[in-house]
Image (cartoon, rainbow, N blue to C red):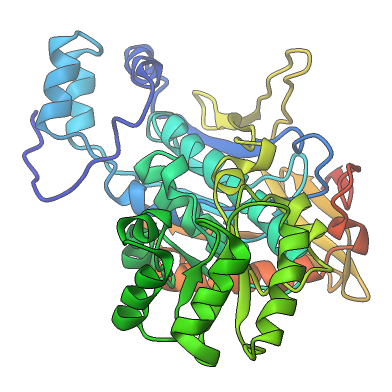
Length: 440
């Protein structure tokens, strides 16, 4: 019964108790092996948002590879009488052997977009529910917020720096999701190691406070990092900090960073002062609880890049994407496929296996078209959205690792540019394009 495999970090216990009790009961009823299709989707976007950004698929696939039950997990389930001996034996050998189709990471999505479909036996698919949802709900929320921020930045670089405002694993996940949505770098070293994201950072206020005066702190930093560094100039007085920075680093100073005060006013003042002192090539980085609205408000300011933390890793007011994972079709005892759906008021779902495409006109998206039950032959005006990421349990490596993040970032930039202009507005509004359902 016991799985003695070593050297892996199982993800199977990032789940809920009832996932396993459902499997146990279904095995006793003889229904656990019925072929089933589960669908990941959002009934609605966060209030006022015009689009969301699909993210987390790569992280989920990486976790799926290690979705195993080892001795410790099996012992816990046995000791606490969670499931029967029969189910323990099945869990000891668990491997996902089904198929997974999903939107590419970085793809914009809309209400009821079928973001992922998991096809396998009921028992293989249902125990993935909580882990799949926790990954995608967080990563999608962060990527959606990050996309609005990079859009508001208008091409100016954005730095992810929210690690201290999130759980340590969420911090690395947030950096990955932000990179997909256009952030240029992160302060998080784990994200740099795992996903090849450029890491950045120099010094905090404590470094300045450690030294006898600000100038001594800047001298120590420049001695260690060179003139092409970023000096934090607001520990005491911003104007004096800029003068000290220029005195120490000279015209080769790369950036000054401002983390307090009226950022719009301070940025203009800093630019004038830097120019007067001969540092016309020294850039200005601003931080301090920025969100997409604050970034947009700084468009007219002489700011060169933005550092974003708390608002990014908390989804800028939408900390979850509110994605759900529902059974939409399954086989009966005779092998016939039956569409099923939840009908509860306010929480209904649509039955049937879905196929989705983005309808295009003159290279601009006009609708999300979702067709149920049978694969359509899409014409040239429709771009299919679902790609196969797992085939008979084999994970397509193109969708995992560092290369997948780079690929997703490029895909996001391309597909976001194809949305209608209204999608770029930060004001509350309806989804940028409608979702149209049709039977084939």
